[in-house]
Amino acid sequence: ELIAEVLNIILREVMGVNTTYETEIATSSAHGVRAVMGCPHPLDPLTCEEDAALNASSFLLAPHVATEVWAIYGDGIFDKFSANPRFEQKPIKGGVLGYKGREGTFVSRSDIISEAKEQNRVLQWFEGLNDRLGDTTVFMDDIQAIVDRFGLENFTDCNSPSVSYMQDGAAAFKKWFEAEDPDAFEEIDGKIYPKCGEPFAGKVWTSKRARERYNQQQLDGTTGKWCIPFVTSSGYGTTHFLQQMHIWNISACVFNLNWGDYVLAGKEFRALEYWWWPDTTFDAQGPVGVIGLPQDQIQHSEEYYLTPVDATDCNLYANPLLPDVDDVGDPIMLL
Image (cartoon, rainbow, N blue to C red; front, side, top):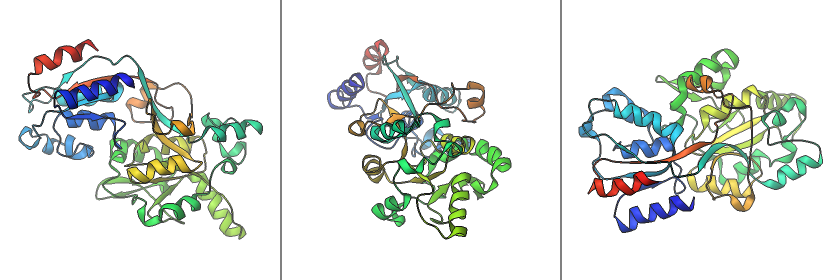
């Protein structure tokens, strides 16, 4: 983390180069590489990657460096853009930064894990969150408390274009849930979105198990916690954890907040969140990563994410239009 911070300061403040540094905004490695290539809307993979959009004249020419990009994601998009004949200039791929990053589902506070251990529960393992093993909502805050804190109107619509990461694996998402849980998604204008029904229609996606628990409460006329809140932003990680919530029978309520509220929710509430290490935003709360089976690379290549992502090298990419690119390129390649 310190290496990336220092490099970021040198590039931006000393050399005057635009940079994307992953801990600054709700972004991703894919976003960083798209920015390096000059995508006008790097957070929108469809705009950047559809053939109609791959026109060099429509891309920005501003110099840009993406630091702390995870190679497992960056390399794929890097290779896709590099192979496209419409780009006369190819991005520059720097060296590995010397440490690995990991993204995935985190339990937002370490004290949740401690309390669970006192009851012989292991919540940092996907199977440990399985509702069949016992009610895990007791360790978390009520989803209604989070809705009251931020206001349902400030939750991102489930079919909003800003939930951009949803489209990264939309085809596989549809293929999986069409057979397993057709109520989990809806198709609008050829795009796949989470289907968010009651009680927070259009704003909160509920796993199959959560829907079962909510419907049973309605039938019984009872109240109480019925799902584990799961917070993310811009759909970050959506195609991963929605599948995992289903396969592990986790009673989850998944929602998107803007970046500022997302950070506040992760700090203030006992919940699950999709995050990455080595970012330090939530260090004070001591978030604990939820582990699973070893990554199945074949499944991941088909956009099935029943296993989490392994730790991966952090890399650096640079736009070829950097001023004095040879001078900038040499030290970058030494990292």
